[in-house]
Length: 475
Image 1: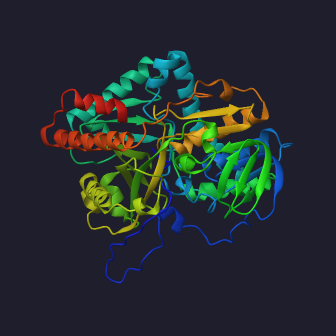
Image 2 (image 1 turned 180 degrees about the vertical axis):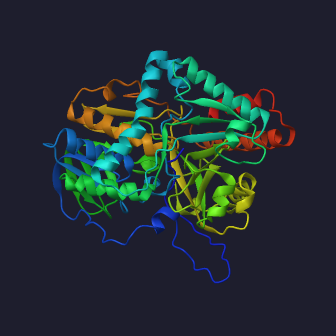
Image 3 (image 1 turned 90 degrees about the vertical axis):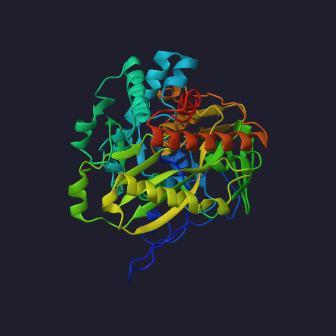
């Protein structure tokens, strides 16, 4: 639910005399710093990591913690956290795309429950590292709340809670609340039910990425920015200026994997899925008293094209949602702006919180996240070719990248541990259909999901057959 953006686009709805702000909420809040030096000369390392987002940084961090004898070089085309890791919704959420049910169908109930427990525990692990390394990213472990405003949405909530309990989890992990119980914590017009899980934290992802990079360097890792990788071969990574020879290459490139020559060595690349965000100006204390939300639990609705929100540390609302679907080609900057989606996000903000209707929307941005064909993230290591990969988080990368980094570090360092025995380890997703089938299929699904949402909102009923089918794919 949270790993989503690459290049941001900002439109500012100005109030009289209000200044324009820098692009992207999280990026605009960072202090200026000097860029790290690019890779200028050939070098050797035990491990070369492509990508300085969360996956690459967590892998580097745990390698330096668990196997400090291994030298680690991280190559980043732009700057640390420039991509999805620095531009997402700030949900460190203990959840798998689609939940544990798909894993149970393939690997069994026990394996799925073990994976889900590991994902739940990852939220606290991120908090532990943040505290240990002194990373100032506004980490707030307040849980996550999902609200339903009609019967089909409430039915989906109830089904999710029931399925999780049937897998051996209890109300301390996920519980259902009726309308009255929901209003004790949050005032949303027309709410009929909600669910709550403690396994989520809100944070500033750009600050987390920057702090994590500093922690990697403090432990002896080397990061080169401005070093776009133009080719990946077994035991070699070539940038636009120089090469790194390494015993192991780790691909931490997510939505951009398919655009890097040689990256397919690690398996079928995920598809880029676009998501977009807006953020308001800081809101007055009077507004917060009227709506509650004192615990800063993250918030999402139950539309099929769901919207996710957080109350930021400086009292803004940051709100995001899906839009363009899978593009025809590789990610490119022209898709990072979607006026229709941004308008829909503003409308959703006003529906959920009418009291924010007069608040200025100070930031609008967007970009791609990575989605495997079977919607299952994974971590894999091919020792024969010296290539590891991790990703496919489907929007939950702030938390899942931590678990993936721990797993990849142990695999590369040949260290056994509970992470290496999880059922997502060495899982291989199938290839996406070739174009134009991929584009046509995902676009059709996008249109159907919006249609079902509108029908449910208008009638209070779901669309027979189509509604449950789309819900199963998207939730």
